[in-house]
Length: 232
Image (cartoon, one colour):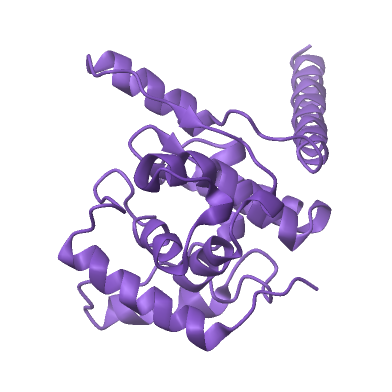
């Protein structure tokens, strides 16, 4: 009797796991073509605002990558993930550098999370540092690298990333900080938005703090060295 119950539980769990995998693949296929109008992070932040008695704010306007300044595309790649076009979702060299810096006692560690990882986390998952969430992040990262093009990954990233308190995506950030459409961002304005991405609820792209000003200068320098962002 116990054997039969065990087999039934095993079959149920196996089917359940297969169902989750199938569902995740369906969503990844869907978002290859369909705009992502809302993400788990947007919902979580909204609940946090309401729970804290804060003014509700959610600014998000999906636009195509053609409607986003190439300056911003280049700025975020230079700022967040300079190996974006070359890696397959995980930048093992960046992870190795970050681990080495940690062992050497560096106070400010380099981020090893790629644009692909951040996109997977923002679109499909919740914020957190548990091993379960990290494992799912890796799974979804490889999945979008297989199904989506690099240009699509960057398009979704630029439309879903948190760029301020209640501000998500390039169009909303551009209108909020600089009162203009994302396609009209100058090189310096694009660098300013990219500069706050490591901690968008702490820093402001306009007006920038001295620290953000130094990051803007560094990003502009990197953009000049990079040249033009070309997708294969």
